[in-house]
Image (cartoon, rainbow, N blue to C red; front, top):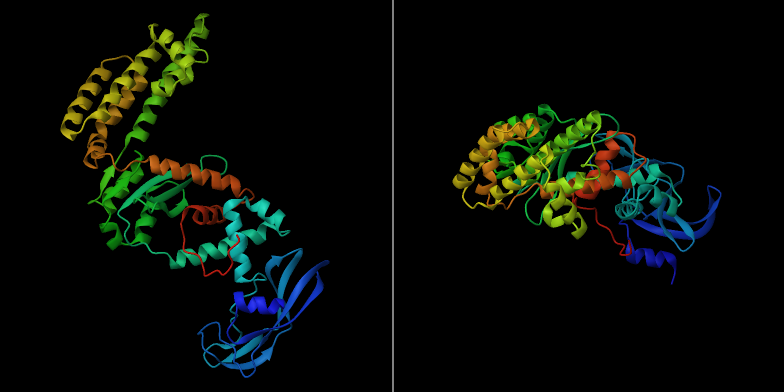
Length: 417
């Protein structure tokens, strides 16, 4: 069976036929080259209007890289026709296997992009003996196609968060869809300002924004203002994860202050190597750590007082009704403000300030959590590491959309990738 017979079974191009197949040196390496010719009496297609027009002339033959086979790289060889279009002038014809000046075929770009989901971009480039830039262009093509063809209908639950990127205090705002079975990255943009999130709602549209039922976010004030303005009907939920993180930050601050005081007074540092005993949940401690924590709890330390306040607050999440939970929250805040633990008092004031949005967690019956957002953020950071080599924000956004966007892919006829 001839190679071109197999190609006709896998990838047949209307108005074109496969010609001779031969081995030829390409860039100093033996490669399999397959000639392509237009069918007799066929007319080229204008790339602007998509209509068949008369042939103006033909350009010199070009090579288009296709999927490798055995030990060979594979290329299509074709001399593009120029089309004489009465509307758009003389243009190079539209080709069904490639576009513009790109040397890769559509199939090869999709092939590389699929491997780039499994491996780092550099590994893909090394395996297929190509460049990192080639892999990037392949992923970029698939992402552009996916963004142009994806549907944004049915989005009723979103999560808003940010991650640190590059060096310094540089951030990327991320908006995720959190609907069950449809969790994906919807949008991302640099910085974490109000105008950043405003751009998302402008692109998302008023009609879709009006259909949002739940928005999960942290307590970053610019985000809260924009959400209240653009999706006032949605329940803005400040959930357990972000709140308990504030508790841990406060306990750690108290612990660091006590350690400094021990050193200044020349006292024994009883908190040495005890950080994670205080920050981890009791049920997550090992047997040995549990014994060490029990010994630590016998000491009259500010860190222990902060720890006990946090553990007492955990009862807040056990309530079923928001009114009872609200009473518990008020009581806990009052007791905490009477202590001399400034970091914990800051947490208490923060909880009191955001009380309505915290209680929204109960109105949503705990079904929506930013745990999903944090899980997607972890995948985003892993994607950044897998795509190492990017130096621009554009590369980073493409990598994130490719991995987390669940974008529709172009038609593809090859199984093994």
